[in-house]
Amino acid sequence: MHENGCLVGRVWLPGVGPSIVHLREGRAIDISHAFPTMRDLCEAPDPARAASATAGTDLGPAEPIIANADPRGRDPAQPWLIAPCDLQAVKAAGVTFVVSMLERVIEEAARGDSGRSAGIRGRIAALIGPDIAGLRPGSAEAAALKATLIEAGAWSQYLEVGIGPDAEIFTKCQPMAAVGSGAEIGVHPASVWNNPEPEVVLAIASDGRIVGATLGNDVNLRDVEGRSALLLGKAKDNNAATAIGPFIRLFDAGFDIEAVGRLELALEVQGEDGFTLRGRSSMARISRSPAEIAAQAVNRHHPYPDGLMLFLGTMFAPVEDRDAPGKGFTHHEGDIVTISCPELGRLENRVTATDRAEAWGFGAGHLMRNLAARGLIGG
Image (cartoon, rainbow, N blue to C red):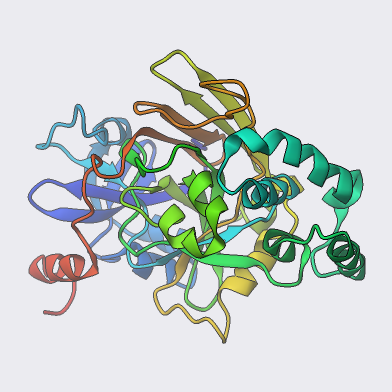
């Protein structure tokens, strides 16, 4: 985790509830008296300055709080880390990298059958050619390629959002439903072909200002989404299937949107069966800039009065076989998924089934009543 960055997050205080914290010299400082919600902090004119200038209550070293997030060994009498967002909408952009675009086309063509994917992958790649990585979505060159692919009978809804003028923006989960680093992350047991998606997540204020960034895991049920794009909600929005954290790094003089465009994310999956998967996602290879994606997500046509958290997509798409030749990668119960980069820290979660993960039970209504009872907002 970058020691000089302005890092803010949320901590669950036993007997109290969720509190906003600012990390100072490795210690968690509760600033909830000034900013009852992360939404409130992100709405400040200069969130990083506001967090740094606010006096608060010292909750102790951050590391034990982070370590206590794992529900399997948690001490319920001590604070633990939770997802760093609260009232913000949680949205995601899909098909923002060429590699992920090709994999979505393959999913659509394979109709959820991972065994068919290898042959389709080669045919699609041959049709599109090697130069698509530099193609700007919505450009005249992209329109010409679209015409060529339609004529060849190879057009896809995923190519439409991958190289067309409009980005794919969808709801990943409901506000308050994301889990934080250390929590279990859910994969629907009906899925037999799925994978993690390591992504940068932007924190955006209601007026469209991008105020910070963090890490996210946009769990993808490849077989479910591949059957039909109309099943995207079933493939994406499930219990505990969105992980965000560990902290939001707020923009300041040392970290801004240009720095986001240079981030290099690392992914590691360690299975209880001894299987190891490693991957990466380089923001320098994104097809649309983070600022462009944000502008398509929140604007006069799409207002978000509480702001939003926006997943930016990934270039990671695993093709390694895990269980049998030609079957590709899929998660097993107990997989440890770690997404990391030096600037934003480590997001680590253990995979379990969505119906075995801790059920989401603390929503916006619960938060408002909790804050009112603590005297942090009007009753």
